[in-house]
Image (cartoon, rainbow, N blue to C red):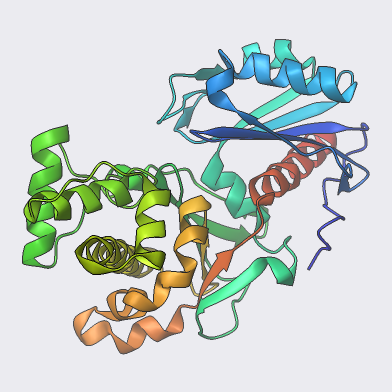
Length: 337
C-alpha cells in the first residue's frame, strides 16, 4: 500500500492537476513525481462559486502553480463524450472549457465513482476499515465501489491485462428495493412528495433526513432536521425524539446493507466491496444496526454472501488519488502511441 504522503501519479511532464467535484464541495490538488504535492490539497465550498472554472482559477491563483501539464477531474454526475452535468448541483462541465480554465494540454473528465475505483489498491492500510470480514480481497478479481455521500452511486472495477477498467454507472437513480411494509410506506411517502423513490432518495445526505421526516410525520411529530441533526439526536438524545432518530439511522443502515448485497450479487466482486463517501463514513459507527443482516439476507444465497468482504475507505483524498492513477495510465498509453 502507498503511504498517505506518497501518491502515485507518475507523469513525465511535471505537475498535473486533479480535482474531485462533489455536490457540496470541490477538492483540488497538484501531483508531481509520483506523489501529491504536500500541502497542495485544498477544499472549496461550491456554493461560493459560480462554476468550476472559478474554483480552478482560485486554486491556481492561491498556489501559484501555473499551467499544469495535464488535468483529471472527477465529478458527481454522468459523463458522456467529454461532457457532464453534476447531479446535485447546476454545473455543466466539458473538457474544452476545462482545458481553457487550466491551460493543460490533456484534460480528462470522470465520474467520481470511476475515480474512486481507480484508487483501490493505491490507498494506505490505515485508510481502510473492515465493515464485514471475508476472504482477503483479490486485486485480480472484480471489485465494487459504492459511494454514499451527497448522492449515491456504484461502480464495478475490473483489472484486465490491458489495465484497469472502471465503467461508469448511475446506480443511485434505480428504484429503491422494497422488502418490508415500512419500506413500501416510505417509498410511497417519498414518491408522493418528489415524484419517484430512487435508491439515492434514501441513501444519501438528503436521504437520512427524509427517512426521519417520514417517521416524524407518521408519529405526528415535527421533523425538518438535517443529517447531522438526526445523527446528533440518535447519539445524544433521550425519549421519543431520540428513538425516532435512532430508528431513522437503523432504517438507513438496513437499506444500505440490502442495496449493497443486491449490487454484490449483480457484479460478483470477489475482490471486495468498498464503501466511500461522507455519509458512508458518518454511518460507520452505526453499521451494527443491521447492515450485515441485510447484506446477507438473500434467501438460499445467504451463505454465498460471506464471500464478499466489505471495507470502508476513510481517505478523503481517494478520488484525487484515483484521478491521478488514471491520468498516469492515460498519459502512458498516449506516449506509447
